[in-house]
Amino acid sequence: MDPISAFFTLLFVMDPLGNIPVFLSVLKDVDEKRRSKIIAREMLFALGIMLCFLFFGSNFLDALNLNQQAVQISGAIVLFLIALRMIFPREGGIMGSHNIGGEPFIVPLAVPCVAGPSALAILMLMTHNENESMWVWSGVMISAWLVSSIVFLLSPFFYRLLQERGLIAIERLMGMILVMISVQMGLEGVKSFLGL
Image (cartoon, rainbow, N blue to C red; front, side, top):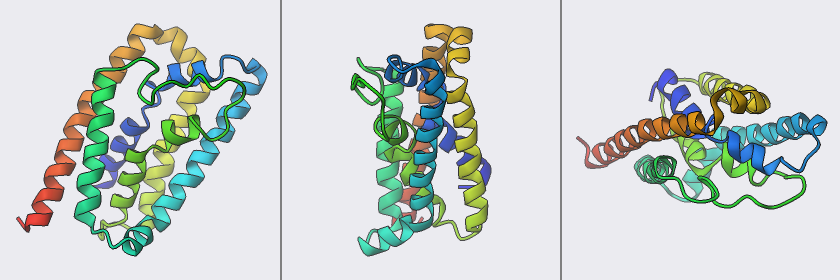
């Protein structure tokens, strides 16, 4: 996976436009002045978690004696399932019901909306690429995170601009792209396992 495709894959997986209704729904009972502070805090939590997986994910895989192919194929399966939920949504959104009331803390905004299982699996896969340094992958991850943060901070504006139907259309388009990316990831994992 090269840095540009990794950036777009991470951005699609974080799905900032598709997650706007989730963010607005979870924060509907929060005062408007406090909303941006909560979003900024949750995005910082997500960044911290993603940085941990980026820098220490491969050590974690080594400790569990998991090889790259297993992570690649399992990451492709999780990504495929999330992409299917984006294309064929269920009640409560991609991650299920978020009616937790009050002010959210880490769950469900930081995890799993932003730093979800697919994003974390992709971060661990990125570090196995010997052609790029950790600084390149950090830049890729922070760039995708920054774009997502800006979209989430401007979520009321995007919601007014695109309306519910526009956001659904974009989410389904991203889901289609993620299906293709997940199939490609799975095929690469199988080819690598078979030594082809």
